[in-house]
Image (cartoon, rainbow, N blue to C red; front, side, top):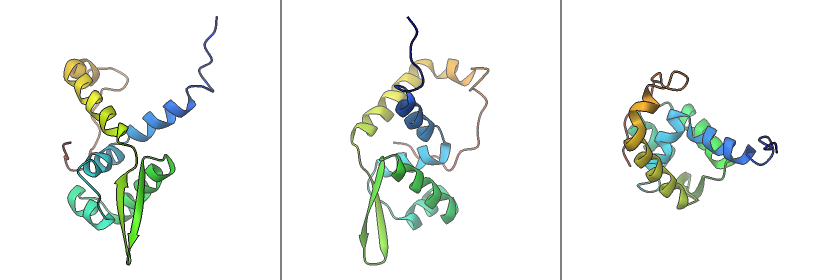
Length: 119
């Protein structure tokens, strides 16, 4: 019996792809502490405004982040509390298998990441 990997897994692939970018992951980890404006994120993560805005747009399109407008400012927040559970589970998994993941010949090479933000 063949497993249909294309249609049923597509949403999961898109979710993990959105979480697989170092900048988007850093933004999500920062938003785990509470809402933030683009200017807050650029300062705290050391990124350009255009980069932060682009990644926030992606996360909004995925339904992971939303914003509220107050005057001329937009405040971004996580939309799904389950995302925090997923990130915590990922940290636990990495604590158990981190060395194996880091040494993986396909996905292990280090990538440039924005300023460290711990959740």
